[in-house]
Amino acid sequence: DTATTDGIAITNLAQTRKFLNQTVLDQWGVRVSPLTKSIIVPGYGIDGHLNQLYRYIKTSDGMRLLPTPTLGHQIHGMNNYRKKEPVVYICEGPWDGMALYEIFAATGNTANVLAVPGCNVFPDAWASLFSGKRVVLLYDSDHPKKNPRTGTMIEPAGFAGAKRVAM
Image 1: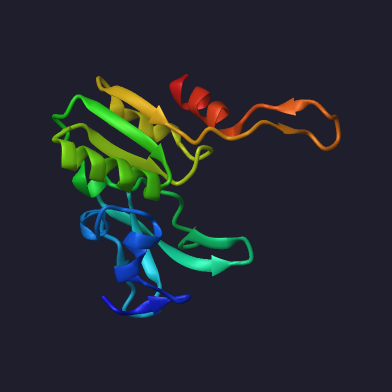
Image 2 (image 1 turned 60 degrees about the vertical axis):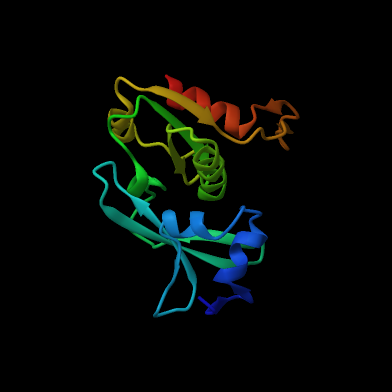
């Protein structure tokens, strides 16, 4: 647990991400890669199989979760998914998903909490997982931006992504 990646120890990741404690990282499968010493976050297919590993690394834009190339984006938190639970909360990004999961666990809420890699990532095949469920989309409330060429306002990405998923 003392391995580091880009100066962040996994034991400090819970503090950095402002979780209540480190337990949620373990529950969502966050580990240190024995090969690269990078923090890795698993992504799962709708069948519950581990299909992707995201590396938490420093980039020119700050710390980012980058997927393993060619494997495609996957869902975070499927290792905790309970099929019989009628309510599913879908967060934008695993850190938000883990934070909500942690709060639900502390308060006794039994709803499923999953996370998609971003508001623009939701393949049609994922929708089958939520058939017959009450789904709550919790995408980030992005600020509207102007199109640099036309000057018109661009719909916020989180809102546009939620609309796409809901349709």
